[in-house]
View 1: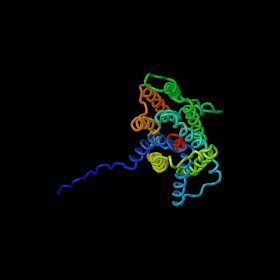
View 2 (view 1 turned 45 degrees about the vertical axis):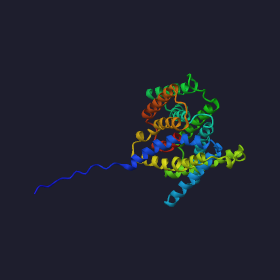
View 3 (view 1 turned 135 degrees about the vertical axis):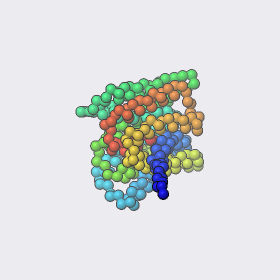
View 4 (view 1 turned 180 degrees about the horizontal axis):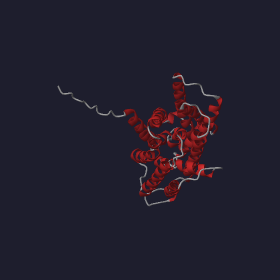
Length: 319
């Protein structure tokens, strides 16, 4: 009798594949969803409601699983991070998307790693970037300059107020990400994210209230696409995709997990063109290639970014 050896085919890691798909596609689509949401919803109130609801759901979920309650110092840290990442960062982008196409916004947000490198270099006792990273930074600046200042016969000038708002937002995102490297945070990354959402969302609601957005909110004029977009941002953009990214950073190398930083803008530009008819000009395509190339170089060679930073910087990579 002859023994027969059966070789079992290797199973696909579906959770890993699904997590990559969520981070690539969902986070790439949040820029388009924001554009639909602000068509009829005030920007700061919309963003505030999004993050408060998502944060409350995620925080309650973690508490139900027995996660230890955070300390007061953890709340202080996440309040600062929430102010930089969500109030100034996400809030600046949401406001700007009233004036700037979603694809352009996504390309500008992609340069956050560039600011992180510069902040790390210019701070007292900072680390000078390597030659490849320096080249990546210079390439990224060229790409942004082409995107904002360049022109061709088929494109309209980019709104300068919107551009300035996104630039400030990206600098604040980078500052918040850099601060998070050494900030005392909860040992649970999902709990930390929930706390950031609660703090940042509360600040967004406060700014929306102070700026008079409640008085400008007319529920009879809120469109169905705006409501659907807000629900999508809460459920998929803030909950599903971040859970997927948390899985990635625990089951994939940091370099592979960080690939969302240069895939998201490509997805966002394509979706903006497909669903909103945003101009897809030669200038935009060249600028996109330059910016994405610079991000690839920076994220590949800037090996000093820690896993903890990767966990927090993701909030800067999605809108």
